[in-house]
Image 1 (spheres, one colour):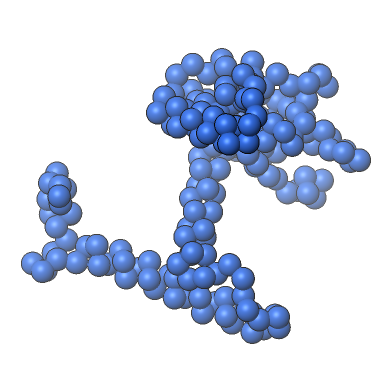
Image 2: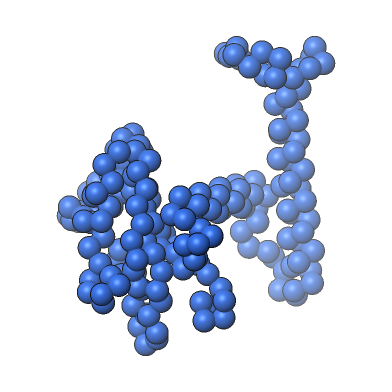
Length: 191
C-alpha cells in the first residue's frame, strides 16, 4: 500500500506488530512510552514494522498518555481478562495499557503526532457508530446472496438507522414549550 502512495494508521498490538527502531534493533516500546508522565503527553518515535516475507514498512510510533482514570480502567480490564484466562500479565503490558499507541506511515510534514492521534480517535468514533448501527438495525449479515439485493437490503437498513438517529436527536431536543431547553438554559441540569 505504501509503495502506491497509500498510508495507514493502526493501533499497536505488541503481540502481532514487530517493531524495530530506525537502527534495525528491536524497538523499546515500554521505554519509549514510559517517558510520557502526565495525562495528555504525546510522544513520537521513528520505527519500522517487520513484515514476514515482505519489505519492512517505515513509519512512526505515536502515543498519548491516558488520564489516570482511563489508565486504571484499562489495567483493571486487562487484569480481569488475565484472571479469567489464568494468565500472568507482563509489566510492559500494564505500562502499554496506560497509553494509546499507534503506528502510522503518514508523513510528519502534514500529520504531526497529535494530528495522527486525533484522526485515529475520529476513526474510532466512526467505528462506534457502525457498531451501534449493526445492533440497532441488524446490519450484521445480509440475508441475500445476490449482490444487487444485498446492496438494496444494506441501503434500506442504513436509511432506517440514520432516520432513527436523527429522530432520537430531534426527540431529545423536543420541548412542550416550543424551544430547546438545553440551549435556553445550558447551565441547568434536566435531572
